[in-house]
Length: 215
Length: 268
Image (cartoon, rainbow over all chains, first blue to last red; front, side, top):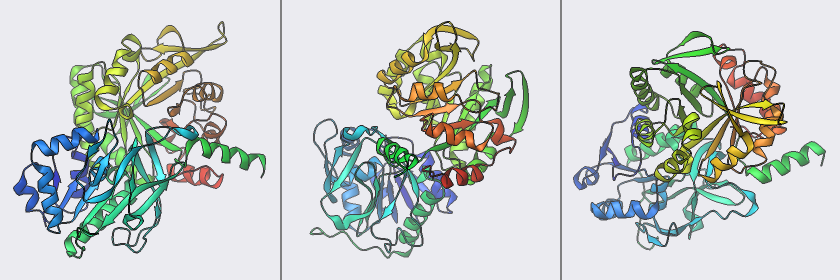
């Protein structure tokens, strides 16, 4: 089984790659079309600004590659900024178009209520779809978040888990073969690794649905 | 609603539902963990990578590595320790000690650390805070502050160079400036409490926490489990750091977290 970690110059991929290795799988950090299109599962990490990330993806043609891979049914997991990139657009430093695989928009946390931005630290997941294969066999618990923008999903049905930060915040999404985690599973100790393991098991089983255009 | 419940209700309103963090600190010299007893006698307590992995398994929420190597070779070794640690643990970790330039930050972050702590260098060159925050994001920049009560002022003073040099700067004013410059977090060590095991400096921690909006990690003085409860409630700290009591198993992380949870503190 080949897991590709998409390298597009945004953030440290070392921790994600090591976490995959520790779970007993091999991960190849890849920035080229072939490496990504041939993979059985794709991880799209990311730290930084949304606009910069899309620019980097576009410059190397990886935006099209990721759309193609997702369209062909390859399981794709976006992490942190990588999750936000799956959506239609983001308001971060002006409006930027995303990959458009899921409908929704990343918006800035409103500073009302005295909550600190970024939302940084361990917050508790509330499962919206506990029977989903990504959440199978797991109990709700804390995971590690670092982000200043959060996703407003257009479809309630795409939400797998939320967390409470003065308001319900999108923590995990999934539809067909496209998944996202706003937190850092590779920094979320046992629960984070268990979530990654569930994704890898899903890739291995080939049992994901497919993302259809009409949702 | 009792007073205590009301307190927690208000506390939660202010911080969302973020869990209070327990952070073991590993002092590392030339690639080995040491802990100063009164900053003079250093005792070797083992391999930093192994110890870090142990704390991850025990439920520590985060780790801080403080590099106290004096030599260039020691610093280079630290980068290797960071790289190995990043591969072995699945919790965030901060690295401090000897970081005085943006390039030093880059080297450590690239090796896999999540955050950088700067102390003396931030005082001598406050632009380092803003430059680092702009380059890597505020969430990566921790400003470490060593503070000591100045009886003449009736206020806390910032010390640098491992607590040896007074700066004439008031601690609260300094953390406010650090926040304004883009620091993501304050690691606040009370020099008065450090090493005493008589509890965290609640007055200092509260004075600092109440004046800034970024998280405060309280450090220095932890001796028993209730000290942590006190610093999270009365001290208004977001996280608490300790070294010796964890390394020598005087307090085990799982028991500490169970104790805090039982007292109603939001804990992972």
